[in-house]
Image (cartoon, rainbow, N blue to C red; front, side, top):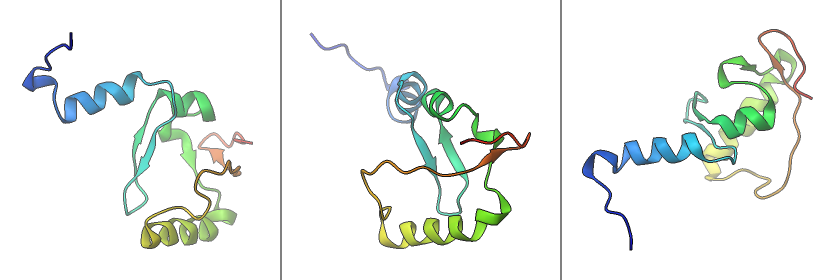
Length: 96
């Protein structure tokens, strides 16, 4: 038997609940590059909260070039491939 979902739990509220509880990393950035979703799975994977992540200045241009290319193409160049990147937190701790 399937449980009935109340209108209060549908749509946005249901999405937020799933994103909060899922163990996989979910990261969503809007077209301006603002991180809108960074769940506990992303914190566990990277070891940082979304507020702690910054792109080092020396990687800034490459980051934004790749970001804008992915937006224009509708997908990342390296879909389904594991990629590593260097970064740091606001406290200057290395991410890799």
